[in-house]
Length: 335
Image (tube, rainbow, N blue to C red; front, top):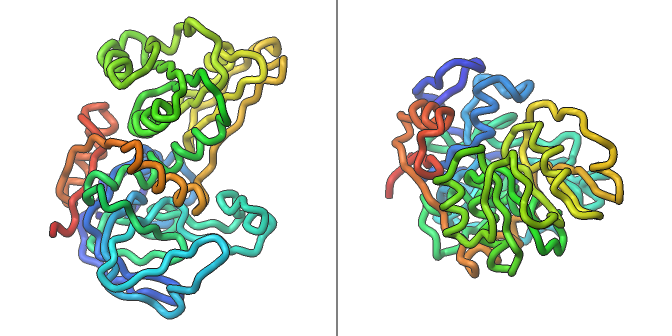
């Protein structure tokens, strides 16, 4: 399913089967979860995508061919692959490994980074190629559909969560896919969880309380206690000062999305006393290895709704309209 131009439907098209280059794997795609970032690309909210583009960066598949030196071990990733191995392919698709960011453990900020389903072709197709050093072995307890949402909503959500440190009282603004996954880890680790939804969305608030949140309410409300940290998963800029206003002294607000509407001004008094606003950008391979170690121990549960590959536009439209009952997952090559 090919995006020729932003703000246009994807086109079902036959394209040549890709060939793995040096350090790459050819992967036969089994499933690919749909992410809000895909919507941002289609809507033209993210600049300079590769065009034409095959979207998709929550890819589960099996190795069909291994390129030269694809199993070279680095100091960061010790993953090795064999034909037939199940692999996960995430958003971060390539870094130069040489810049100051890469050499200091911040490869997620590499100036030359390439991203799956954005600047390189992704998983809305039968086959894809990926850099072996950025692929993951996946926990066996999950099937292909269940594990697909963990590859972005889980991984980048986990990076946002880890930036909260040891915060006991954690607020989450926007209770979509990433929030639902990370909330499970927060509860497993004994955090007090406060969930903020659209005002009046009592169904989502009830679901959050059922999961284990100590409080759930509208984003226009203040929690009963000041928060030590808050993660804003919704791409709504005005939620940032709202979250900041709910923080205790020394608290932190993490913006967990790749795109957000403009953040309005706010009183300096809300930032004073060493409160912090920051963002979580992309992911590192170390984030992935840590997340896939803890996820099956919780165990983190995903909720999905499946679509055949050729119905990718339907999945995107229903995502846009808020009509999904879980993460949309495209079924590409069924077993």
